[in-house]
Image (cartoon, rainbow, N blue to C red):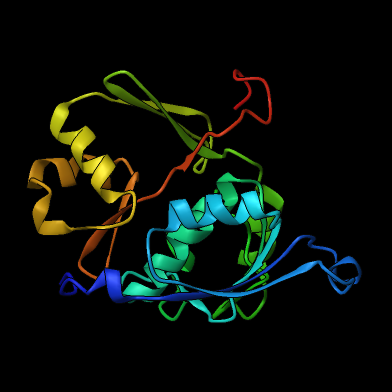
Length: 219
């Protein structure tokens, strides 16, 4: 049964920022940018930190991957999506209690340091081995959104161009109450593994393409 909608706007995420991901370099004077408590939208916050010079972020709290995850974990995954899109290294711990290990939905996000609930470490190792920038990425055009997805094997290209679907994509970027999205649109986008439901909200999964890290035909 879906969880009731949470007060997403009031759900904060704490993050510690640095100019460098190397532990030795991060200890040099002027490298640490301090801890921040994210309270607003993840996208503008991540973009602002990147402009400040942040290239490394640490999330102290574990992030749940399971379908019953709360709003804090859902927001943390959105923040990791945005940090990944900007090419920042992210130090975070994933947590799974039901054996789903995220069902591959989050394999395009910067890999976690470990996955609690995966005692042999196979999920975290596979995540690291399979990760590359833009593994599931989207770009916007006039009247459409194109998604290029390699999370589950060969490249899948999906074009979203129906007005109601585009409205749902835009609304779900920072999380939208599932009841605000028509049932048929939810069915299509969740079925395509582009939206995920957490804490009574729908969340957009693909990262945004701010720049192409490889030739377009490879991505």
